[in-house]
Length: 254
Ligand SMILES: Cc1cc2nc3c(=O)[nH]c(=O)nc-3n(C[C@H](O)[C@H](O)[C@H](O)COP(=O)(O)O)c2cc1C
Image (tube, rainbow, N blue to C red; front, top):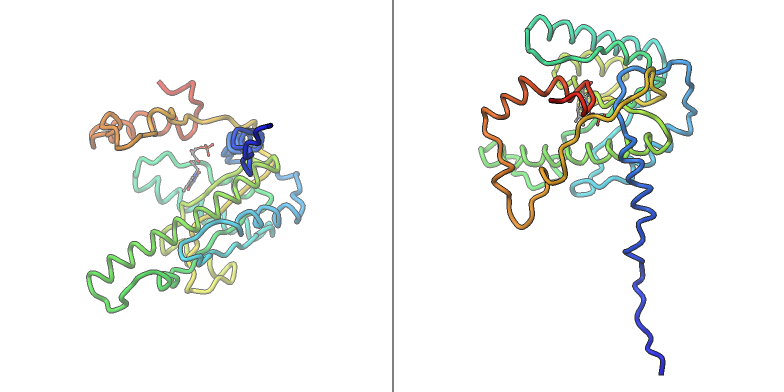
């Protein structure tokens, strides 16, 4: 009698999809200036946002809005804000290696990502103004931020899958940025602009930045104390390595 072995519903040994996915993951590279002559078809914006739409979110609240900005005058106004902010930061001597935000205006389109923090109500909150309520709300805000990041990441990967390079821009947390951008785009006061996604054909060939080794980030059955960095080690990294890993190749990090 021939033995019939139950076949798994899926072939978990098949790496085909994983390998294709990893090619996309590895090709997602930041570029901070684009070839403005390249026209992105409208369909590509839809395809990218379609990927965002499927993202997971806390309480399935899907607390995101995406505003596609292709109008050059609007892009120029937003770029101007970032340029001004860059100058303010330079004057404040924050010692943060600020990129050249003039590259924003060269992006074929922005996808402005906004969230609505009133969705904290979808999570356990007391709404009584107590200290406990504050703690729950803080946690709920983190859930919302993670949810929007999940959708944004899906969009970035979709752009990479289409062959584009990307730029995730968040230097906009402050109230001033909200005030500068919301009226321009008719975004209601209740919403918060969290970041801008740019994508397109890079102006210069992009490069792979330094990534930590898998062994340095993975912990099995408990946190590996060898991975713990002291405050002083973090400060040292910020002072000596940060600018290199933000803007240069892995090979250039000593
Ligand atoms: C949450 C988040 C915020 C970021 N904010 C900015 C930003 O404000 N300005 C900027 O130039 N790059 C920003 N970046 C891009 C990072 O600098 C970039 O991803 C990082 O240097 C690694 O390079 P890679 O994207 O090519 O792997 C941000 C990325 C993420 C995920």
